Image 1 (cartoon, rainbow, N blue to C red):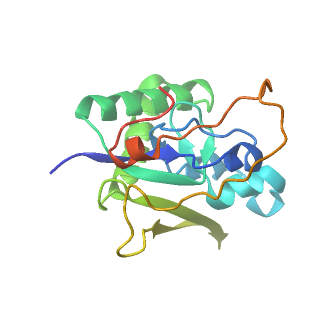
Image 2: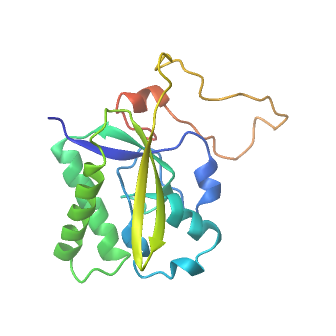
Length: 187
């Protein structure tokens, strides 16, 4: 049985507009509900509310991603994901010590791995709510239409613009074929 973990997936630049901080494409991801445990969810608005409702969390950046893709992972990659998340939990979220942060990170990675009992390349979205003082997560798998060509399906509609090609704005890129094969992007 192969080890699988979710990776952040960015098909277009929308996450960079929707969230205050977007995850980097290809980061290992967790659900991230722990970021909202001490929040007054009803008072959240704008980008914080969007992050609560639908944001997975990249373990290296603590940035948000609307989608994740089920990917193969080695034991070393899993261990590195735990360490990266533990560093964030300790440094940015105030865990009392590194071992407590590591234990919390292991639990989060275990939950993330439990979402990956799907085929490699499956895309997953989440909807998070708060009910009765508890945070609830619902997940759905976005699947390809039966009979569609897996690597050549139409994912985008291209529109020509008059923007200056020498713009200083960063270009968003996604290696969809690489993501389907479990290869990280942005590296």
